[in-house]
Amino acid sequence: MGGIFDRLQDDLDARNNKKGLSPVDLLDMPPDLADLVNQIIRKNGMKLEDVANNLNQSQEEAKQALEKLVDKGYIRRVEVKKEVWYKAQFGRKADKVVSDNIWSKLDNIFKDEPE
Amino acid sequence: MSKIISIHSFRGGTGKSNTTANISAILAGQGLRVGVIDTDIQSPGIHVLFGFSEDEMKYSLNDYLWGKCNIEDAAYEVSRSLGGSISSSIYLIPSSIKAGEIARVLREGYDVGLLNDGFHELVEALDLDVLMIDTHPGLNEETLLSVAISDALAVIMRPDQQDYQGTSVTVEVARKLNVPRLVIVVNKTPLVYDFEQVKSQVEQLYSAEVAAVMPHSDEMMALASAGVFVLRYPDHEMTRLYRQIAQKLMS
Image (cartoon, rainbow over all chains, first blue to last red; front, side):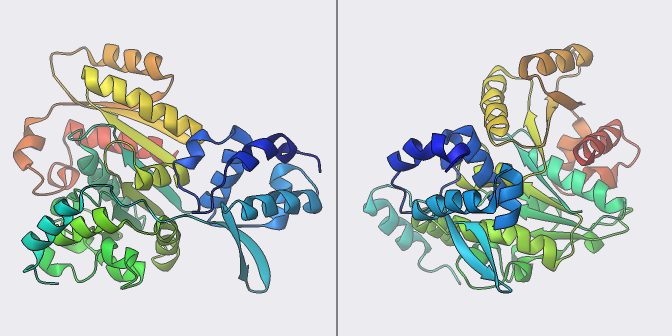
């Protein structure tokens, strides 16, 4: 396969991101990869042909590249009106790591608050 | 084509929410349909400027993120109660101001993808021309997402050494995220400063356009978030500067 993803393969392999994408990931991705993922986020999904046009690659090459990102858990396939779109696969925002004691104290404070 | 604009600052107290509310009012005054979403989930506040009270808030952004409602169910038309010359609509999507709900978001987190979907669904469902995002200061996930999806970003800073340093971080991040349009707004500038010199220094320091150097304003301080400044003072110099910022963000 040609194109930018050959160069990014090592980086993708090094990332074992099964928990999904965080916006923070965009800051330390290689620029080409960050740019593609960012465009997919900004457009809230892209079709294969749009990605191929964007990367100036054939659809086959673009598909291989996208499938690698799917495997890594950064994006997912979504079917919209019988067409496949690629959308960002965000993870859940990390819970704050603080002592359970703090949360139980907050629960006690707020337990009488109306829904 | 609709536009997403984020208003951000590295530090708190720079006037983000005031800038967001005033620019929203100006754009709505130009006949644009404007959405304003408060992504400052940890310390929400922009609803106060729009005179929107907790009692009117059936659903909030928090409810959407917890799957309790659609994002448009948490949107409230606030322009009618503002007065002034607004010929179109402003829809506010507030964050919850209940302490327990803020604590729950902090504790449990939320699905960031849902927030991204929400931004796009809002634009479509409310047929918005502009979605304004009022962010939490500093860098966190919702802020980075807001910046990443924005067509334009205004970074607000005061002429203060701590702000200078923090702004450079924000500008660097915005460049990394390829935000198509980045402007800086210098706010709360003491009147004794040379405004042209401040503008030139800031532009040189960040290699970015300064959309306006806003003076410290006693009228703004006296208004104390009890309204939207440009609607109360349509002929004030600050209002002219807010129009200038709006124009630069939309250009």
